[in-house]
Length: 199
Image (cartoon, rainbow, N blue to C red; front, side):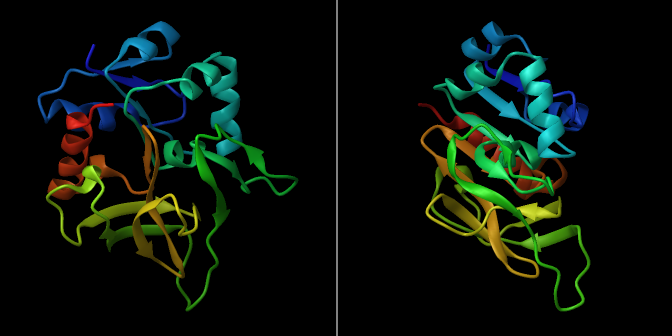
């Protein structure tokens, strides 16, 4: 099977599925470990909080499965944040995440009278990572209050109240903070590039 979308129970799965169908793909939405292991590409979407999403993955018994995937894996929005070591969404203590990309997620700092969450279109500075092949200063659609800082894992950068990672990657794991499924032609190009990756 070419593409599996992880059924995290906390994502707008239909819009992600439709975005890939517009590219001619036939994705399967699943939480079956065997299906995820055998898919050529895996997408981890998510909306909501890291704590809720990690609890869902634990209840589905697919945390270890996701951590051991060797094919290209793309996290979208909260799905990207789940790929990191931890998130500070909880006021009590950081929420442990999948630990697949060596960074952490923190709340954006509100300043310059800019409201949170960060919601809307922003031009993004991208690297030469294959995920952004053919894109030059693309525009993507963001909806988030938490973000990963700019660091060694950063492959795209954006600024809203502060600089943050618009995309991160480590080995076969990649994550985008924006919503490519809602980002028009530039977002569609990211998804197409992802489907062309091999490991």
